Length: 415
Image (cartoon, rainbow, N blue to C red; front, side, top):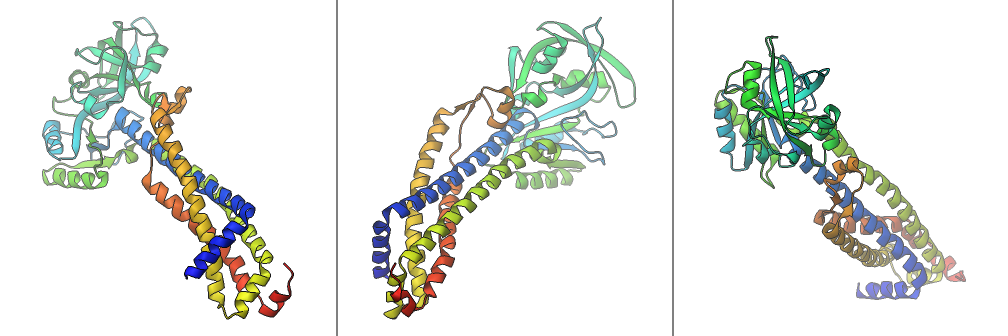
């Protein structure tokens, strides 16, 4: 076996130019694979964290109903509210993986500046003390967070469309579940943005949940939903199962769902972002594999007499195949390691400095004004193993063809 290693190393050094070109292809493939993994995983992680931290939380809890719940729309009229909200919130908070619980009401209405034509709007009523723990990426850009019962927060898009300013009075009109209409004056207390997802959510408005309960004629301990934020590294599915069981055992009939289930549009975008780079990567790997097959085939043709000599001395066909695969394995291992070293340096550098984001709509994919790559250890290992495996598999068929050469015919060849 040591002789094979020695011979394989010698052949790599003997055909420097050809092996250098092959090595560059393999290194490029490993590099692009690693960058693709890092990019797709970073974007998916950033988008997920942004959606969770800007509005949804990790988990959404609603009363049981047949209606579909979607966080982009007001609450369906037929969906019941959660009763005994505070008791449920205490039970949820007792879970060691829960970071925060925020009760909410969501409803639609009309808003106007008194003498202007009313505009349709979507209102989210929140608890000003609890909501920031669940949605830390909802940031005030002008004015301040809710401090008064008649205060209202406007998303940047809504504030612009209403031409509203801090301190301005707005009239909100809505109807409760029984169809009664009620109106209430609110003072613009702050203008907010949802970091990273402002393009989707900056049309929102927020008011105090106690005021909303009076506006909607509902009980002081009712809410439409409970948004739950989890601590880092929490296993979301396990927490959901445990919370659902505990709430059911306590007599509640509630739907405990992941943010993915109540924000299917966003989740679909996240999955698309993860898949698309891999499709492009597959095309690149096919091109690299074809190049390796071509290179190994050329090597076989150039070394016909050498192969014939090995067969004449009693070298078995399996050993000849192993010899060629070992040669490609050594070359691909060195090349892949080189490419991944370069890729690691690039990702660590971009993870520290970031890439400037000048288009606001792109912040949804980057999570802010700069895009910071996340180093992915699993992607590094997968890229190395895949690059070596694909290279060796690409060399198998030319190697098998070499092993089948007739030693007499091979020795008569001049090349």
